[in-house]
Image (cartoon, rainbow, N blue to C red; front, side, top):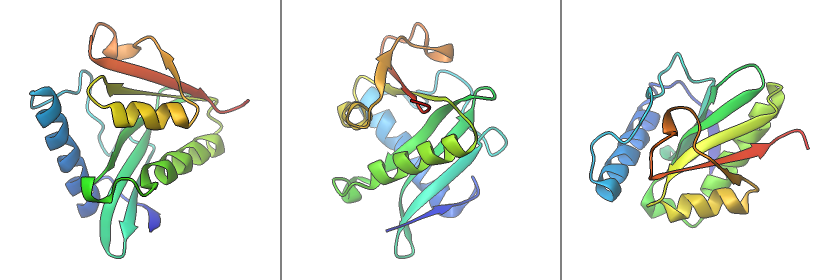
Length: 150
């Protein structure tokens, strides 16, 4: 597996995000579960795709919230590639990138119907926090943070 920084509109990134949206729709029964503004090329600080040969199998990105805080966005691994540690590699890479940017803390949101994601974040040292920003009041949101400067 190779991790590459790619443009937001890279075909594998577009495909993986579409797969993620379809999975979220199946789990939650709604076409658009994003309570706030969806990530865009101009709002994302970093975006990476994990490749198995020439095929993108997972992705994840960072969006700046301010000068020292960021949000993990669009973490996803195709179902047929899960269980191989790809999400952990992506997440750890994003954390290192955030540290390199001088960020002190990462936050993220996932949903109550995504126990695999919650398990990953908890195993990787993320702590549950109350919903923040656009996620406040969303009963299905599960939010986490990780301090990067400790």
